[in-house]
Image 1 (cartoon, rainbow, N blue to C red):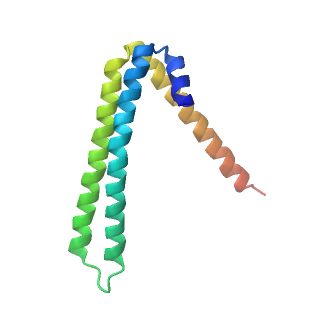
Image 2: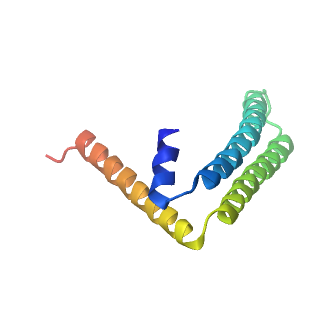
Length: 123
């Protein structure tokens, strides 16, 4: 919630935009939560196939295709949420949001590099 408020503040979102985006995000989270649970079932099926005395290659391939379809479904849901948000924001707000996201990503990458450097010191 605090991150969303900072994001909204950073792009100058109106109260109405904030409500609309929060509704879009809540709906997407609910859908993706259900999809994540279905993905856990697929992973469990994969583990069950792997431990069989003889691994059924056709069954593994069928499961792989199901997993691909599952990932595609989740990707489509995320894109739909992003498109819904894009219709709520102005072009300038979308540009500001993209800049914030790029800055956040750069910060995460810098922190990751710092952690890796600290855990792997050069002698």
